[in-house]
Image (tube, rainbow, N blue to C red; front, side, top):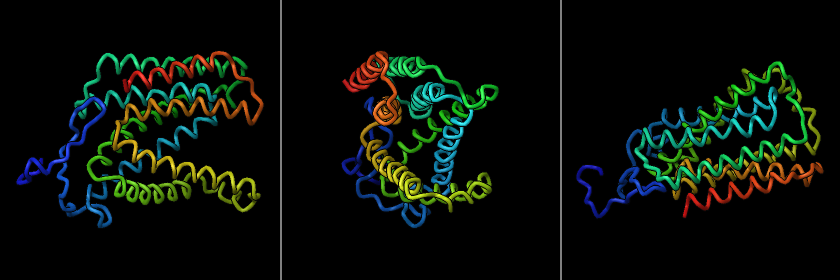
Length: 270
């Protein structure tokens, strides 16, 4: 704890395995030098975490130009063992055999989901550059691991308000700068958007906003490993949406995959 703070005033911050991440005083004053006058971590810490998060999203989205959605779904799951390894080595989290079996069950569900999605065939936009997309996805998964574990620690130590405010501000600046450098020629197309395209982009932005707010709340109660395991259900929703919206047929393996992922998540928390 902080020197001079009574033990009774300490509020333990615990991961899902029961380990104390830190012992932050319940009524401790804001630390000097925090970001934008909010206290908490120094501004450059928020900048680094925001940079990792922005680039992770950029790499995974860019991967869709070169490889298939099945490859993206499978390789993106590397963020799960990555986050568990970081929690173990950097923060001292101890996972029981039950946790490991549950994580393997979730990963097995994604493998089944990939086979389900691949039954209909399909190829990458450019098969000669498919390896580029795979590498981009692996890089994105590694950054997701670093970002999610960092977010867990920051949310638990400094609260969701500081985290969301600082990460949102720095993430916006980084994204704007990257658009100006990487997508300079593509910004002219924005003036030709119709109402439907604008609504789709606005809906996408709204969903991301809600996701980050809920993520901050989630990481207060659980850890980055559970967060990445829970995100596996997004693949289920994606394939279900493709069946409802685009009329794609659901393969029997889809339901096997769904059962494995749900069983893994329940087993992890049991």
